[in-house]
Amino acid sequence: MNPNPFTQFETWFAEAKASEPTLAEAVALATATKDGLPSVRMVLLKQVAETGFVFFTNLESRKADELAENPNAALLFHWKSLG
Picture 1 (tube, rainbow, N blue to C red):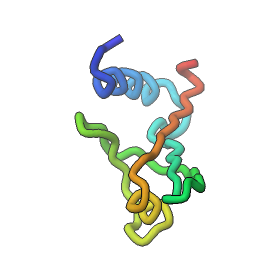
Picture 2 (tube, helix red, strand yellow; picture 1 turned 135 degrees about the horizontal axis):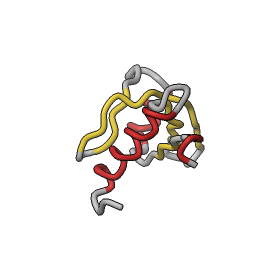
Picture 3 (cartoon, rainbow, N blue to C red; picture 1 turned 90 degrees about the vertical axis):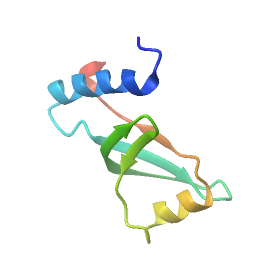
């Protein structure tokens, strides 16, 4: 396992893209309001960099509002082919 989490992710992501029957880029994005009320929705990963994960969104969306209020978020990838 690579000690750099983004480098390790790139390895797993390449494996997923080669073996997943559907979009390996699909990811569940969990956010929460400033009061801690959670929301989860699917987004498409656009890029991975040393600074983090990139996805696109409408800046007037609920997720943009929640991230502006509370920048803590989580991503969950479901790659069944990788176990």
